[in-house]
Length: 227
Image (cartoon, rainbow, N blue to C red):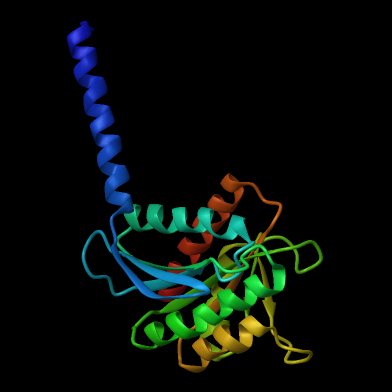
């Protein structure tokens, strides 16, 4: 191959890579709200027109759970690029006391309640997935939970578990104290008629493992909508 042809080939390959990168990152972007705690953004990824299947994914509700933010956001972009579906990413950026365990969590949950909850209630989403990372002893491996135990959430979660044998599914027992995030966000979502998963990634997971497992979860979740 002559040098000129090789150069043209390299330029063409780079152009394709750049195009795919820009296309994957293109979204209908908006800022839902901002205050002294931080801000909330919304990105709608629907590269191939309107879809009758829509899943919303919430990231950043607990700001110290880094593995459940970047990797999940990247999966949303990649999955929407490679499938004819609509994915929505609500991302919470806590700016006040983000590294303080209690204050950071409270601020993230408050932002979700104030800005994301009303927006979801004006939508027609088929499922909302709230991404978290868990410490040792708080569940086993990668898992989903249905905090409200409404019929539709449970049905979808059981369908996902049947498709992904290496994912655990934890049902709420109704006993014990509810978490503040459940009280402020996940339970109100399900009570408003939106099936809701809490998705937990082991905090010690690497990026590629978290990406791969999240990709499979998104695929199984869309598959469950057809079940």
